[in-house]
Length: 260
Image (cartoon, rainbow, N blue to C red; front, side):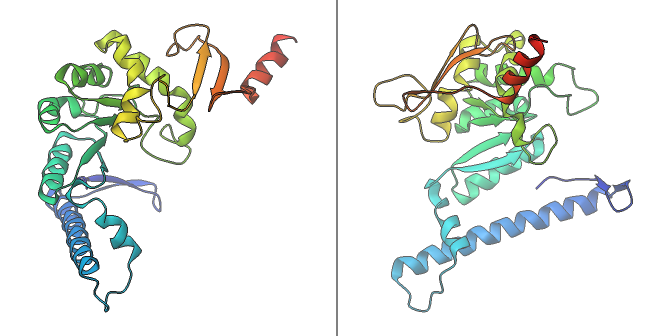
């Protein structure tokens, strides 16, 4: 939970200001609620282990119990330096295997992330700095600084839903989020790994996805240039070892108006 002192009220179409102390208390209340959920899951797991006949099945607690003691990684969405540090502290206290998502200010705690072995699924590289007094290229340098510090990263198309830039339709721009970081310190090979192998390793599916090796799923693309370049076209799309149609509305419109 973030300490939010400003929020937009859609009922009045105005910005609501909250005193810092009040915003801090709200965030702390939500953190306590999360801790309570973890404790309830811990008790539920103990009751399951002894086979208590009075235990009523609770699917929420049953699912949550799977993340205790690092049994399943937990993706934690946090952007600011303070929230990232608090998330790491919470994960350690609860015995969770943490994956950081968002990470807008992850470069400020890159040493801590590397020390704890916490990977980062980055939000949008092509964005504005989080603070007015930060350098304009802070979001562009973030991926390169993390990799240089020894943090494994992956690129994502955003961290939200709906019709905004962070929606699922933004996945088509993911290669360009990676490409933007290359002139600002991210090695090209690392940029390519951050949209292929490293995401598979972070999410625990590298035995099937992420690289071209015997025994893995044959999900491949054949391009006419650098796959991260915006001018590159996909010549062939292979899914599970079979050539699939790459026809789409964009291409049909392009051909229609090119022949006009």
